[in-house]
Amino acid sequence: MKERCYRVGVVGSSFGGSVHVPAFAAQGRFEVVALASPRHAAEIAAKRNVAHAFASVDEMLDGVELDVVSVASPPFAHHAAVSAALKRGLHVLCEKPFTLDVAQAEELVAAAERAGTVCALAHEFRYTPPRQALHELARNGHLGTLRGIEITQNSTTLRADSERPNSWWFERRHGGGMTGAALSHVVDQANWFAGRAPVRVAGLERTANVARHNDGETFTSDVADGAFATLDYGDGLVASVAVDATRAVESVTVAVHGETRTAVASGPDALDLRTFVVDGDETSELELTPQPHANLAAAHPNLPPFVTLLDAFAANLDGNPASLPTFDDGLATQRVLAAIGYRV
Image: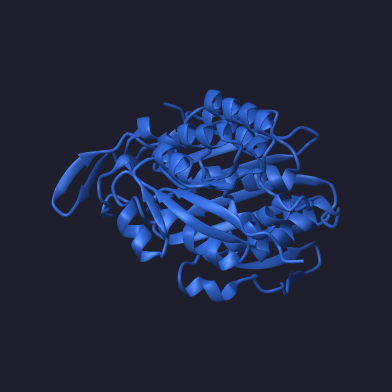
């Protein structure tokens, strides 16, 4: 029996065009038939061989028959796009950060429950082999009783001497900055390792470089270039999570600490990590199964884990169990981000 092919409309032409459209095409169970974006829809649709281009989500929903809407627009547009798709009874994949605030996230969780469709968040980094290995070690008791989770992501992209064009990304009211862009991924991973949402949160956002420069232009940023939090999960488990884009080097550390062993993955970026298990006697590097769809990395480094996420999404659409980052997970993350100051 031939498997069903799901018709997809993608919202957003930037990351939507460079990752969402090719990822759905590569996975094999989807056909991207439409792209919606206010300025570049026609250009990107032609480049990516997408049949229909629309200036808005509503025009797309009125103009073509869809099974899935994949939302890759900026954060300030997530709530409206997801709401519109759910009112039509469609399945939804939404980029992070889920929304601008907790109230919006709660509304979308309720709307998804009413729609009864498959709804997921695009936390593709869960699907990298090092994080899959750490999750398995944490959840199967191999590390002993869990006591700590540590995730730190450092980059150079927002140092005072780094240039980046002015856009919505530097405006708090539009959901810009490192808290939504990066800490949302990190908090999701910590909650996933813990197997639950935190019961207490303490932390802060920080803007070290308010004045930004690009190609001779000077402008002001009011968003976080660093975000830091401590998460208390109860029962003696605490996580420390941080993202900072003002550092001298690029580095990522993801660690889960138990009473008998620590599992740690580290490297220069989120997709280039080596994985180790450490106890009192030795340190052992793990030989991990290669990343599925690794051949797609040449086109975009996020494609292999993103397509693996879509494998799970397709399984859920077929009615088969497969682990996905849910809207409830997104709400739990949104509450953490709000607790340290991420809200309009």
